[in-house]
Length: 306
Image 1: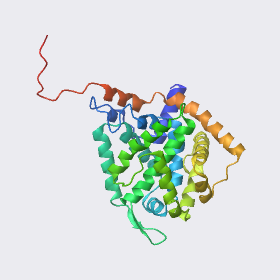
Image 2: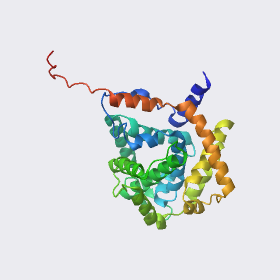
Image 3: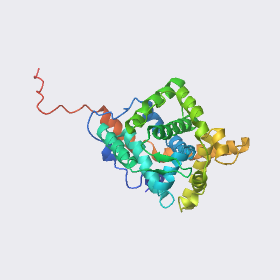
Image 4: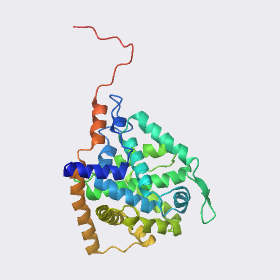
């Protein structure tokens, strides 16, 4: 196995576990899925460094909502098996982004069924329900903002303002299918929503514990090399957060030297990840599926021979 294959194998195993099956993205012919090859979602979600840092940043930001964090703390096994949660989250984003329409809709329905059982009482006495449209909106907006921030920071070519708005509008489709309401459709609406919801956000004990867990690579991976990679990605994720979130989560305050060092480390890692994982097996397979002519329905008369 050469170096490129080794990098790809380790990345796929960490992110997808045994759940990555390229065949899920290969049929039916002519099916663009929820978004299609010309979408901005395909562009943003195909950038590994941006998605890694943005995904971790989203987990950090999401932890600031006491009700969302209560659901994770009381119904998730992230401490016992953090990689499994990463696998499930990455699998959902991948299949809803690049899978066939049927595969994407089936993944959404599975998550909706899980949400039906995630409810309880937060430490502050308030009841929560993972199917609550407002909670779904919060989780989605945090993901959208952080995925976009990761792409803008580490992609080879950042999106234009118009493309950024397109991304937000396109990706809202998944949140709405899950049951979210009032989902922002532009970057300006994302910013307005974050300003609106900020007074409700606070870092409780569960959030601070989760943050410390993420910042301790040994809790996630045992291999020293992977531990180093995690430290680089977590530092890059913290750098994507708004200043008020960094303060609330009691993370180290950024300095010019720290910021410069962390960004350089992520960019160096990005070159390694791109070398090993591009072109993406999933995106290549999905693109071929979408661009192949759709099969004619059974019983369709053949065109006459000229």
